[in-house]
Amino acid sequence: KAGVTQTPRYLIKTRGQQVTLSCSPISGHRSVSWYQQTPGQGLQFLFEYFSETQRNKGNFPGRFSGRQFSNSRSEMNVSTLELGDSALYLCASSLPAVGTEAFFGQGTRLTVV
Amino acid sequence: SQELEQSPQSLIVQEGKNLTINCTSSKTLYGLYWYKQKYGEGLIFLMMLQKGGEEKSHEKITAKLDEKKQQSSLHITASQPSHAGIYLCGADHEGTGGFKTIFGAGTRLFVKA
Image (cartoon, rainbow over all chains, first blue to last red; front, top):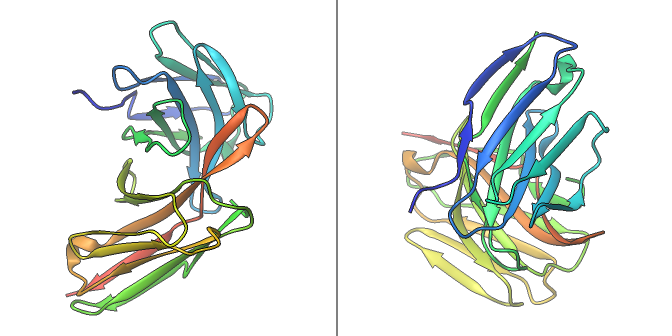
């Protein structure tokens, strides 16, 4: 079956702009999590969605938001971009239970200039 | 994440040598995952451990979860250049809306041919 698909793969934005990233999970997976990865901070948890509801949220400012659609596809949005938002954004899908592996997409590399 | 400490941060080994990466949690681990990542790409699932004392192997990689379920180790035997990459441990920790999977900062492995 098809894996987790993230679009776009690469993105360059200017400070102050906003950006929307997309994630299509594996068919049947209703839980989608988003992570930000930077060299300095490692892989940081942003939020998790299940059945169109945000279940968990990490320690990120309100500029970072997300949503999930009825077909489990998810988007995350970052408004008023800052240089520090430059990172690899990873999406993972899984079955909504503890002790189940998460499948990751290839990520979206966001560069803010 | 400070909740999951990985050591060492980076490792350079000669091809054919063995190595060990450690992952320590500040909380009881309900599920412990090991992933491998090539630079700028998504994470590839290696193994999952749930029970205290559990040990799993895949090819030349062995992972163990200690009895108290707060520490795990990943051991690679007879390392090869194909083992190079970033190794991340992940764990299910309880969040406000249920469990979320968080990750350590990763261990960057270089294998010298």
